[in-house]
Amino acid sequence: MSSLPFDLRTLQTWLQSVLMDADSPPAFTPVQIEEVITASQQQTSRERVHVYCNAYQARLVECLREEFVTLCKFLEQDVFDSLATAYLQAYPSQSYTLADLGAKFPLFLHEAAEGFANADSESADGGTQFLIDLATLERLYAEVFDGPGIEGLPLITPDDLENISPDAWPQVRFAAAPCLRLIRFDYPVHEFVTACRHGIEPPVPEPHPTWLAVTRRQYIVRRVSLTEPQFQLLTLLSQGLTLGVALDTVATSIDDVESFAKDVQQWFQEWTASGFFVGLDDRK
Image 1: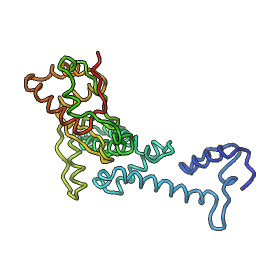
Image 2 (image 1 turned 90 degrees about the vertical axis):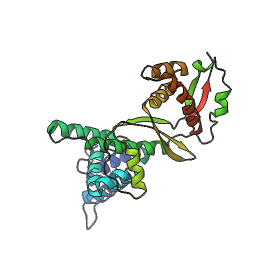
Image 3 (image 1 turned 60 degrees about the vertical axis):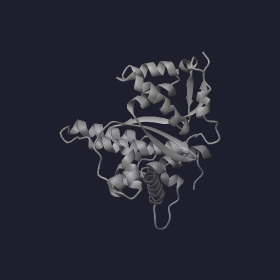
């Protein structure tokens, strides 16, 4: 290696960029690959870099396979690998951790579907939305697993709820667990993923609105199916609204308000048992 006119940090940045795109290396003029990487008797400097570049890309694709395992199985590996490679070209890794690698993969699929629909609207169908939903759920599972959880935190219990005076209930605010995620899908992809993980090869489900709460307990990612009113109420509470305001807002779209009021009590019993809340405040 020749004496280089820049420091180690610059060299590391340059080498990272080369590995991510060996065909178009960024040049710190007048430095080129040949001035940094020594050629061998069998390979040129560029060929030697390509070995590492190919290995690096292959490892990233492998990581995406592991994160989106159900999507990969559904599409089959060759098709998935092609999508993953295109994704890495569109959104190169910018993080020190592989946990962030697939963060924009659902967005990439959405953008690809939009481009395909604009190019040939007659060929576009709802099947692409199923793939987007599937990728979104698998990414969500990964984020909840790797992110902060409720392990070691004091949780709200049914007894805590019973100790709140009736007059204070409308002013109560609930603090959602840091791992709680609320999401709507066009397809029941959670059932599809569960079936695949049990070795079943289900057909693509028919589309219908699906609401989920995804959380983590004892380092295990769990999901809970929700009705639309449950989803709306949990969303409003997680945004910091008081229980009174949240209930009034949801009740405007409920036909049987009396049954709704009875259901809410059961919902909170189930949600506290699932560890959805880590704190509450009944101060006005």
